[in-house]
Amino acid sequence: MRFITFKTPQPKRFSYRPRYYDEEKAALEQKKANLGYSSELSHKEGLRRQMSKRWRKEDKEGKKSTLSISISYLFYGSVVIGGIYLIFFTDFVDKLIALFGVR
Image (cartoon, rainbow, N blue to C red; front, side, top):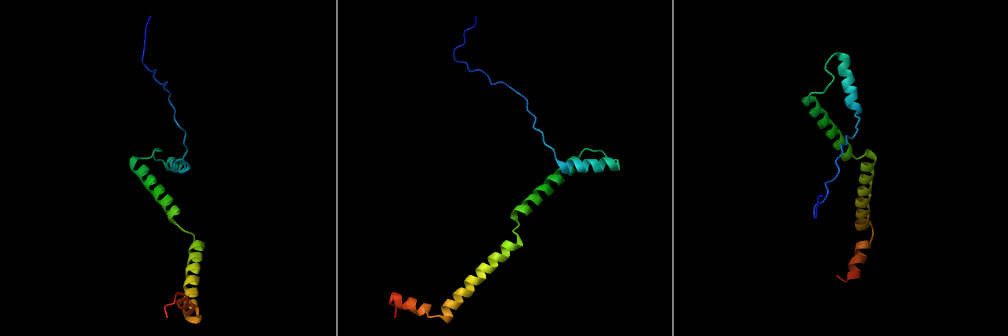
């Protein structure tokens, strides 16, 4: 009979292989097989694919649509034109100066 006091049991081990399907890789391997080359990607080609995929992802994330850019230009332009109108073509500045009693 074995007497164990302060020993914690080990966790049960399992093997899990996640499934992942890459359409671009499958299409590239199919093209290579049709041309008669080996269907596996070389290390160099794999690195190229990873780099181009990351660059495309960063390009998509960093791109603003032309509509949002034009709306922001329109907004800033209207603020500038409105400010110029208030300063030069109304008596807003005179009233503001009189309100604070500078004159």
